[in-house]
Image 1: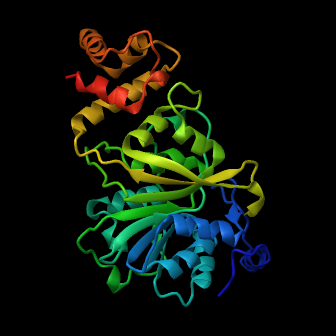
Image 2: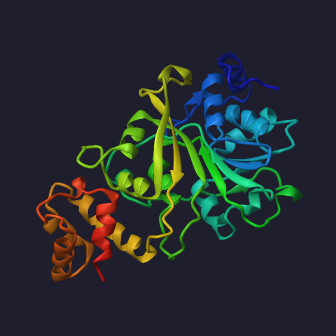
Image 3: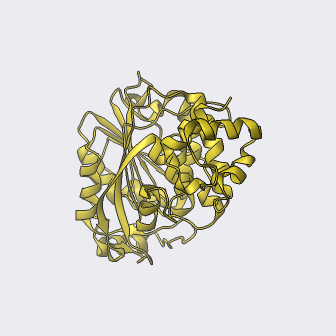
Length: 335
């Protein structure tokens, strides 16, 4: 077995394949087995589980996942890494490598909840690195970029669709799809389809991303993605991760986070949909008062004024001061 979590082994492998790291795809690979094992432990895996790993990179986490789970499907967008991954996972019959953009892969498989890449076991997604990007695109909910797809080797017979039992998530992701990946776990698509959220998700993310996702109302870091995640899931930070354990060395530190979806069986899905119209409008003009910023949500001014009065929310407050449940309550009084 290639101990690809060792920097010397990784560098030797990279030289053999003449591989150059891509800044555009945020390729900073973990070279610390202890940190990788923390990610695996946080995913609470057993041999009864199937795992989908997002962005396996050189396969360090993939190998450890394969030792803990029944089956691993590793989805990697960079076709240059596929031969390398095949070598690293050689001799591991419970690993399937897929060359695809996970955003496209997840959409293509959503009709059967990723069952094409699982056995009749609990499906978990596991991942090592999630970065954030600056600007309005990153802060908006539901951005995505599609890439061409190729499966490097056929899905095995044991991966045939079976009755769904739920799944867990972890992944190795570049910065530019941080928001689309997390939002895509929960948000209703343009076609009205609602994804089945994971039972549990474990990511390694930039520390700034963790702070944004966990930010309470009223903070500068609190935004639309904060509301989305906190409405649908409880989130906890499990461990800080130094930038020194990556190669190439990034400019920021990271953190391991875990998300557990909330029980929202008592909530109305149409109300939640209206709620995120309000969220988008509120944070598009976050420095304006609710009276002015929510005007962009498309609801009649009289209805909005009545809803604010019924919830007792002062119209001169700003969107950044409202909790997810505040937004939901406001939406519940709108037609």
